[in-house]
Image 1 (cartoon, rainbow over the protein chains, first blue to last red):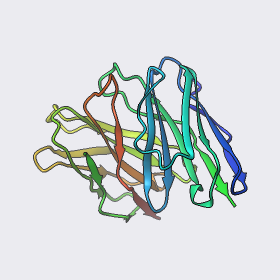
Image 2 (image 1 turned 120 degrees about the vertical axis):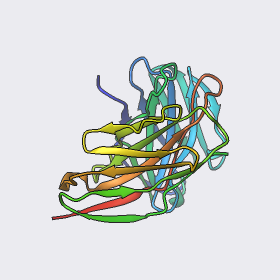
Image 3 (image 1 turned 45 degrees about the vertical axis):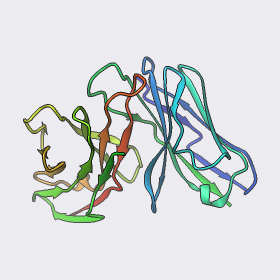
Length: 115
Length: 117
């Protein structure tokens, strides 16, 4: 299994630009999560999906952030317009929710730098 | 809402010694899981160990074991015979009861473990 695949691994952009982060969950997993990691706030849950449907987006910091999951094998997190305070590592993770005790499987993250 | 607290921002341990990382959580649920994840400098998140709330027996994975105290809402991680490769950030995580067919995973702020040669 290839694991959760995120792209790009690094992204450097200027303030005001649109940023799109991509994620491919593990095949067969039906739950997908987006987290943001910063030194100050640790790992914050932004949004999660079950069977491609957004369940809880209360962690999305502002309307500048949006996430989609058009099918079971792909999700995007978009920031428009980006700001320097959005600089962080963004993780995508997936799990198979019907299995009790199913852990989260993480991608390698995207390090976003907004200048 | 559930919360997870790791009160030790940083810990150090001598190689081959034992160290315990603390985690407490707050919840009103009875059905949940707890996890410890390791994040080395590569930033990859690696599952270390998991514990089901209904099981009284503490989980063990090789040199890693937990002390799960449900009444006290405490879930500490013990690393025995520490190795240089254990140096990493360790996160405690709580998985909620199911909502809309899935679960929410909440993480603590992490403890950075240094292993001294």
